[in-house]
Length: 132
Ligand SMILES: [Zn+2]
Image: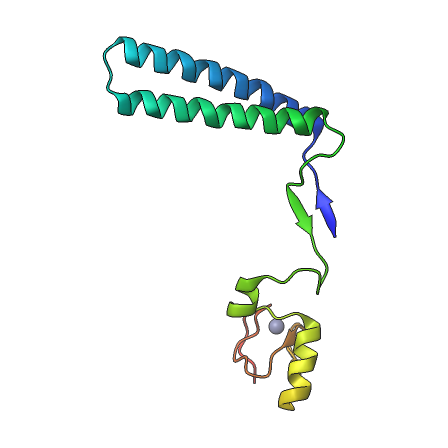
């Protein structure tokens, strides 16, 4: 598994922006309460500030910590499956081979662009031309 980690510079910048957002949230909440806003408005301000503080902690951890949280994990086939891919399409090539062996299907290729096609495709999913 490979990971994409956020840069320390962008994380530091996001952390500083987060502090400004948290300060703004505190001022907003105090102003709203002093103007006689109801508890619902105050609650909104408190949640807003809490999210901003969480963001600040997260970003400063990524800016200064030795181990940054990954933004994306790049996984190899078989390391981790995607439930939506399994459900809606895009089978891995290994699975395709196994499925073809089980079903006795042969894979074919687009005569126009050479892309590999499932045998039940009517149109090429690479170039969009109709398969003869
Ligand atoms: Zn094609």
